[in-house]
Length: 173
Length: 428
Image 1 (cartoon, chains in turn green, cyan):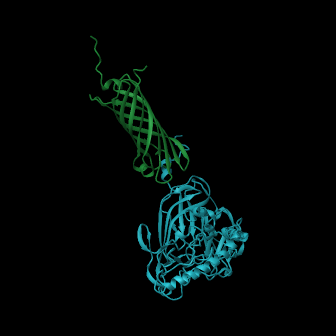
Image 2: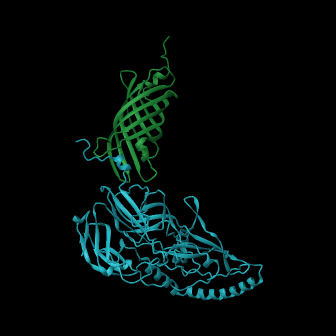
């Protein structure tokens, strides 16, 4: 009799995944005084590493913030990250994420834009909703670093939250 | 080199480089004091109620405060300050709104760099805190009795006063046109920026100065509540020196005179001069390429076509009133037929169009001040790098409700080189 490997939350985590997320992005502290919360979304790709609980991922998203006045902030973060799955045996899989990359920052009405370095810390949870699809949520804190620029007194702090949809690719190819 | 050529964008987002200052004076600095004898005492010729009775015995007291409610500001239809601003200014020579210093607009964002021609001020209310409400004694039918001080809402509170901004939406000429309903001259009020406004966000600070002519430019008016003819208000508003307001008219538009100008602090100088020929009078300054004709009022009288007033029946249960009404109505019909003949003649349209065209070109000069008895005056915050010429008002006019209508040159045009920045220069 052949063993069937125990199905459960572990399996899908161990396959490459591609996913999308969508939800409110909240500017915090100093950034929160300048612009308002808005909706944003992004896509990402995850790949396994030989060390099981770790994955590497690459994420990108689009966030556009309005403000009470005429200021507008556009963010296109692109970053790589390491995802670590917390080893709890539970129907939900919890993951911690840490990453770094760059973000295209655009402001209006000044019509100025540039790439700034960013750092990410995140937390995700997901559960299977079928063989190929997982649904989850994510909470990421994004830190936009401008402190190294002469004359800068502010950095950016954004909290990205949302629901995620993962597609497990391992079984497809 | 890391960071080379980069700007701190998140700081930029919250940094304000544009400062907007609003002043309620014709003068850009050192305005003439409030002329107590001639402000708020002048009855406009639009007041038709009798010489006896409460209207003259219990007139409204001169107001002590001026209130302004601005919804937002725009530059050439582009938003940059969509924040509400409420200004309450005391009517004295110390309040910053009336002493030449100005009130800083409480909050605004920066517009994009570029050129702008007009500033749009969305005025919701303009209130003087005094006005009186009278009612017609229906027994006699022609004697007005005192009812109460008029009240209005300002800043969501009930206060004594009268919001005359509601009458400033149209000029009388506008009301004659088919498009009258779509014309609104105060929301927004289009203020030309003298010399254009080139905003460059590389400058540390830019100041946009807006001046509304309110000080020494007031009169008392009358408003009969329509369809009743039994209630009327006496209230204070801006003078109708430019566009005359006649009896029973509520179209007072076109009399909110305003000008805007911009300067970059640090690239300006202060100009002083003493010339005894220009003593105790208004002195103005223009850039050399400007034309003085824009700032002089041409003596164009208002066309005299009067639409006759429809008579009203004061007291239907009084037989004398009823008979009076029928007589007046017959006269009204005859007058109206004459009026229609006048309107149908081509002269009507031509006269009104010419009048409006002549009045429309009038502007307030960018720099204005009031000289003292020795002929000493100064202009502050004058941008360097331009050529200027000075004029003074030489023809007498009535202070308190009139502005200088014509000017004579004072001295010759002069250049203001860049190295004058930050200094006080006295020219001979």
